[in-house]
Image (cartoon, rainbow, N blue to C red; front, side, top):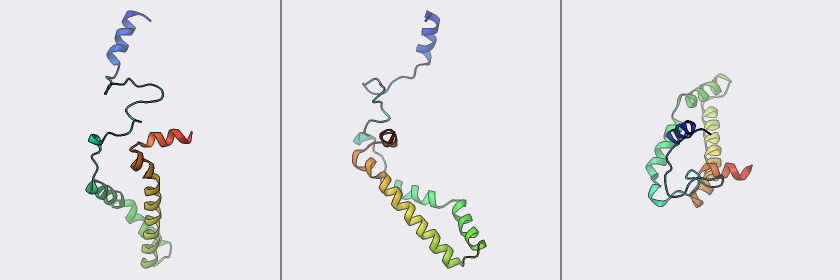
Length: 112
């Protein structure tokens, strides 16, 4: 590689955070999150769940169920049951990250 190409690559290289250079097996994205960087609290989780359940698709689901012939009570029951199922699966999926303070990338890697 020429000297000019090396200087261009050195200029484009992203600076590394932390003391350890990333390798194929470990980098800052898959290391457990340090206690000082854990910034989510009750209100963060609360606001996130309110945000995800307060969007136009939720309202469109209810009106679509009514248009399909369900009464408003049946549509409401279907939406509540669906949200409870999704919340349960979300909690089960987040347990490894909660106990081991790992990110989603690790769980994706262990499935492959």
